Image 1 (spheres, rainbow, N blue to C red):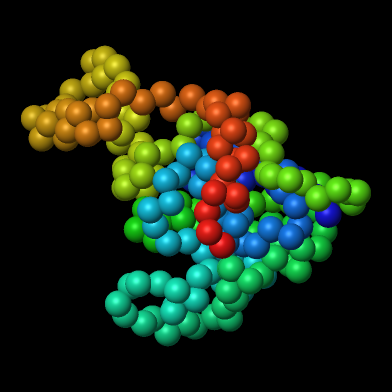
Image 2 (cartoon, one colour):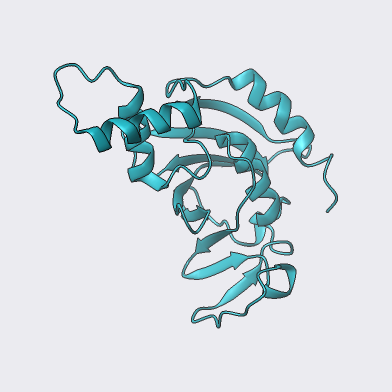
Length: 199
């Protein structure tokens, strides 16, 4: 089976989203790696999927956190669970969360399910809008402050502390284009993401 999925970053307007085709034999961990390329994240942080109140993530013994947190919900191993074992129908939705500090939540919507004679060789991005926020920017509110720092302030009055903070953001992150999205570059990277990494 081939799934057409729409991945939408929650809480940001105008919306940031990507549409992609993947095959049903992909594991959730592989889907995580695909979304990292798709959205423009850099895979620095932990993640989880939430599907029908089950957390699908790396098991505790795969992580190097140095501590154990008891789970209050049912969990499944993202390296073993395949999309085809979970996705049942078009319009199914599930949550993907990346970076539990910045807490980037993405809604993944199943737009189409198609029977195919040949397995998709690699994921394909069909469309997308707008650039992903930078890593470690401070979540939705930090990203909003970053965008303000690069906008023309006009007549807006800032105190000295606000001016210094905006200047620090501009120096740290450099020029950004929140509208930028290069689908060709994304698809070139998607051809490599599942073949260049050890599973």
